[in-house]
Length: 349
Image (cartoon, helix red, strand yellow):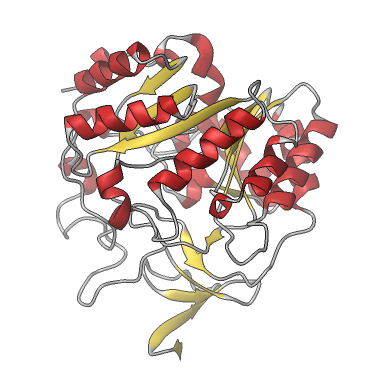
């Protein structure tokens, strides 16, 4: 094992532990799971030894282990076309349900982000301008093979690119639309450093939904998010997308359980609605590893119903809310006006 700046560097062939640096197949370094390991921590385990994570979570947060024919079929397609999915990279608890249903959220521009948000388990590094020129057509072919009528595209932040990757993102959308003209595309984008022209590049690509996550309340934006991200910056990007093309729906997501107050949740919902956001999702923050921010509280299912009612009263077209809800979860059902089919009252207490 070699070292870089005194930090162990692990080759990609030997899967690095959480918090360790490693060398990607493209030749640049990255940190596994995004946040460097703290001295004395045990990176692979997100919970203390002898206390399984599932046993420490409330009953309503225990998702089934991913398995099944549908799951393996989607995984095979993703591997064959060299695509990254936020389902895997962010350790989404819904991966089994979604992949067995034949849906996946594709993550564009690789699996290494230039930012290091304290809630996120996507690997962090500097790709130095690397992009996969085949990704637009590979993504389009995957959508075709999966027979998707609705697809969510997200991406890592690419501050190493002059336009934040907006042109590449738009190329992926156009390729998908050419091969799958009947497929609706939701773009869950990075903030492109707040540059309006880059936002417009993606909005002009033919998407139906433009999404960017506020993630948390104003007071907690830092340290929850990377210093280059910002509460006001996200609101400004969402507002610009809506003003630039009013026919495109706008969407954002808020995590709960990081220490926010009732008043701060209300204020964030008000700010999102004032920015013209049409759709909002609310879910429980879950700590990916011991190197990430701890959970301050587990929000009960009934509370999510209460927050949903408040959001709808503010004029959102829909608010999908529940403990395991993520921004792209059941996204194609967001306009069914039934909490995407979720019944929080049936979750275990």
